[in-house]
Image (cartoon, rainbow, N blue to C red):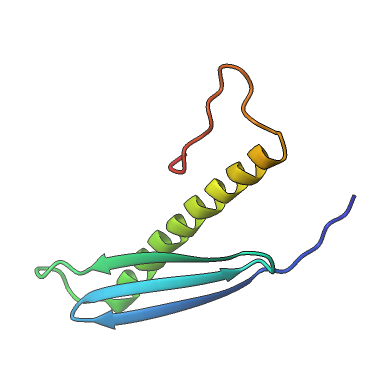
Length: 94
């Protein structure tokens, strides 16, 4: 069975006072999720905005990934695809 779909994402980056905040909105067509990430520049380091953007975005993507994993686990449970004996559900940090 073939399945093709498109998920829409928007990435918003905000920087102020050597701190970068990123928000990533994901719309799957049936679910909307938002991931958040922050990066702070050490006062003794050179201020390189691209590094803050990359690090904050990576953290927002990790947050979004954890949310997607939990959503999938819930959907699996609803579909009756629970864990096999001796194999607990993976955690969001796996």
